[in-house]
Length: 209
Picture 1 (cartoon, rainbow, N blue to C red):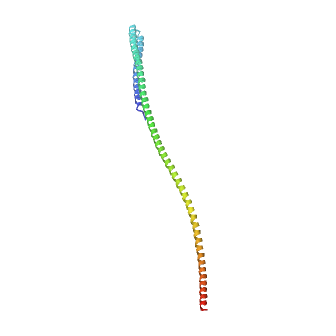
Picture 2: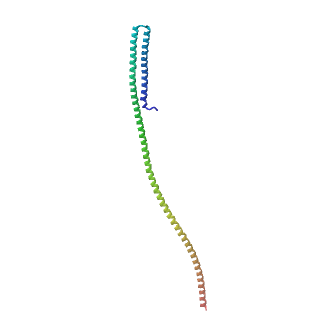
């Protein structure tokens, strides 16, 4: 893609090419004048007339002076044009350098803006990460507390289970002891009934006697 600042450089180059064509035309005219003066003198010498030779020499001098004038003017103009071209090119390159500097500055500012945005995003993420870490630490402490509480409850449950088992054994022993006592009571009642019956029988016999 062509930079907008390259247009003045292109214009300067085009103008220099046009001036070179113009200088080429002027130099061609000067060369033709010199050739014409030489041909005029040569033709006059061949004729052998001194008057024509003097006139031809004078004309050659005039033509040579004109050619010299054209060449000198072209040399001065070429120097001026070269200086103007150098100044125009320097101006064009200065504009190009300024635009490139502006583009570079814009890119730098854009990069700085992006870096600032990334740094802001990193700061925000750091804040969120810190909050998340605190929440995770709190959750870990709560979990440890619940685990300790669960362990205590399991220990209490184990103790209660052991107590319940012991109570169950005691209850079973008590039931068996009650059954044994009931059997002993039944035996004692039977013995008491037997003794009572024997006593009543003895009393009956004694009254009849």
